[in-house]
Each structure stands twice: as C-alpha cells, then as structure tokens.
Length: 222
Length: 222
Image (cartoon, rainbow over all chains, first blue to last red; front, side, top):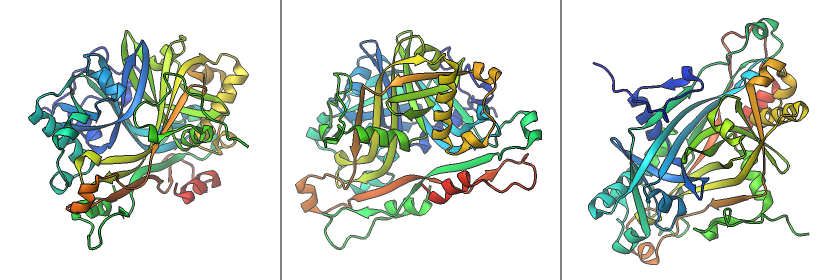
C-alpha cells in the first residue's frame, strides 16, 4: 500500500534544504496535530502581517478562528491568499563550526485561500474541532457557544491540499576537517513543550476535583 | 524616570484586545530575548509566505539570517515590507464556556523593512549576535565562519522601531452567569519549553566533557 503523499505546487515545493523535506501526508497531519497555535500570515495593503492564531484539523480541512473583528481573519475571509505555519522546536544543534549551528524542528506550511464558514452547523462543528484541538475533552465538559457568542466569532476553513513539511533531526552535520580537528564540543540540546500542574481558577467554587481530561493531559507531560 | 515606551504606528497599533497590549519597550525586548526562533513573513507575487527563521537582538536592531538562497531572505533583502512574530505559549485557559477558552501567551510583532548586511565586520557581528542568541557561549567555543561560509549566509538587519507586544496571563475571564452556574471546571494548564539533557554527537571524539555553556543552560531548565 502506498502512503498518501503531498502533491507540491510551485509554492509548496521546498527549494532550500530539500533533504529536510517530507512528502508524506501523514507527516503533515502529525505536525499539525501536535501543535497548539499556528502563525497566520495575510497581506494587507501590500505588506505582510503574521499573528499567532488558534487552529484545528479535521481530515483535509484546517479550521482557523478568532474574534470576528480580527484584521487577519477579516482579510483571510475576503478570498485572499493566506499562509499558515506550525512549527515545533525540538532542539538546538551545537556544531564545531558556527556555520553548522542549527535547530532540530518539525515545520508545516500551508498555502491557499480560506472560506468563511457561514453555515451555523458547520461553524459549530468547526468550533468543536478547534476546542478539542486546543483542549481535548472540553467540548463535552463546558458550555457551548450561544448565538451572541457565535456572532462574535469567525471560523474559517482552509484546504490542506497545498502544503509542505520540513524537518531536521539528529546530530550536527560538521565538516570532516572540523570533526578531525576536534577543537569544539558537538551535540544537541533537546527542547520540548511540557505541561505543568493545572492551576484552578481563583473564582472556582470549592469542591471541584480537576477533571480527568485536564489531569490526564498533564500526566502525559507531552 | 519614565520607562521607554513603544511608539505605535497605524500598523503596530493593537486594535483587538487592547487590554492585552503592552506599550513598554522592555516588554518587547523580553519577549524577543526569550525566544529561539521567529516566524518571518514576506509577500511573494502578492501572496504571503511565512517561515520559521533564526534571529537575534542587539539593542534596537533585530538580526535575521539564513541561507543566502532562501526565498524569504532574498525577498526581505529587496527592500520589501516584512513582518516578524515571536510567540511564547504559556498555558491553555480552560473556561466554563467555550467562548472564553483561550491561551496565555506573550507575543511580539515587528513591522518594517530589512537591510541586507554587506559590510563584512557588521555581518560577522550579526552572526555573533545570532549565534549567542541561539546558543549562548558558543561564539567563543566554536570555529568562526570562513569566507566561503560567510558568502553562503545572508544576514539582515531590521529596526525594532515599529513593533507591538501582546500578552495574556492569569485565569479564565468567564461570564458571571457561568461562574454562578458552576457547571464546569475552570483554570489554566501551564505549558513551557524545557531543555532536556544534552546529547553528544555520535561522531564526537572520546574524552569530551560537555562544556559549561551547554550544561548550565540545561541546568537552568528554562
């Protein structure tokens, strides 16, 4: 069985560092699913604007959301090209030479246009996907949005058809002369996002145990 | 004594969530200095492109660097507007209502144009700033770039004059009715980037102790 592959367009074809490009569709999903926020970029009056934004994935659809007044989302909703990046930093690569200092990372970049979700049922579904991405188990636990809150929120849907994935892992790639010279240490200092212990809200009524969907996430440490 | 303030332009004036805007110049420096990579956005053929990129700060100057062939850097070097975002995710905010789910974060966004650094001494200085940002203590420890490596690397310099900082911290901001209803848990699940134990390169000659500038960083855990 062949694994589904990304089909690069000129825009999503990785030109630099091809050895770090990954064409596997499952890799794209994995990078997106492991992230909590994306960086959404739009063009406003010819200038780029990039802001951190919430997202979630449902199959081949990337949902974005935010205040219906947010400039990035309003621009994205007007059938303009947008670009979304999700990046995981996995380590700092200490090389023998400055030139080979690097970072280990997993990066996904998605190009395309977004569609403003206006159908109420799809919008509610999109919000569920977004909430479950940010805070799994919360959709059933917390109060669903009411009509007023729905109106204040924009949900955009974007296809994952045009995307690229790039990764670097492992030790530094030093020059042979520098390895032989042996005048500097070389290795990787790994870094990872870790959960800390949940902090109940100061205005929470007494008697609450922290729910399992929160404690389990913390216990996973990842 | 008045602390230096950011002077917002129309582009760097925060329009949404003003209560989360920070106008303190020291806050901008703190957000930038605490990050390891930025997201650099440029406009190519009218479409936005955003990619993770290395950076470092020296006073009022942000240095960016990468392969001299990288499309983002080549575009940025052509006196085009660029936008740089550095974002720290500090926690997931679990609210009583979906609408108030949020993240705690610190975010800096810088607008402007970059200057390709062509003076060799300034370029070397920029590389030192970038290296010391990514891996403090490494500039003295490792081999400096040679002429061939300098030619393969582009360094850009950008002013921090046009920038904005936005932060969210603390517990969820639920509606009074939801707090009174007391039907859902509310609180914050903090998240932070943490170093793990250094991994020496497999091709490192025997006898190396891991240098203090690496072990100290790991020991700081932050």
